[in-house]
Image (cartoon, rainbow, N blue to C red; front, side, top):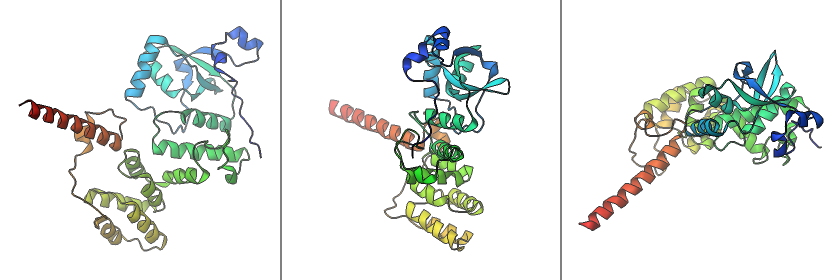
Length: 300
């Protein structure tokens, strides 16, 4: 079954640079310079505008060259609701600009959701929580349009994702069942994706007990432990004592760790860095330090 496509009026890059008269002659949506005061964020947008290097680079680019690609918005309650371009809007606000170029397009709620998700999934860095809620709301929007769940695995431009299977999409959506504190640890890289999916089957109360136990023991569940926690939960046998016992068990091949609190390291890295990115840069720095020490030793 062929999915219904959403025509946003963008058939090629040349259309971004058409004049208003050319757009009218070609029946294309017009790009307007709209006041920032008339622009509203999309409600329920799962993609966060993160402070950090990416936003700083965008601010610098707009400062030098202006907004090269117009944002996409739709009329909504005498204002304009941003569908794609939240970071451009944030950058323009940071620069104190009064207006920005916007391509205005009439869209239904479902069309706007799908367009927003598709545009933002092209970003270089996407948090697991962002992808999880994005897939969820896009799947709901497609369902409203008559697309069934059985079609999620189809590799077409109208599928939920061209890059991931329907099964993987469903696994991402499972993350939306995690309590915010545990989901944040997934975003920070402290809990890996696979165990996080298993933990999503625990009740909210069980997840809260798990969170308390993780803080007491300064550890997170392995994938095998997460599978066992899910099994005990589904059997109704996951008591607080059993959860604490399982979490305190040594993991296979567990070794001693040197631990730092994230707050002790955060000032040295961009705020958007995950734990894995911090670890990577620390190891690179230590490798450089090791080489410098070897050079100093050889020079003696």
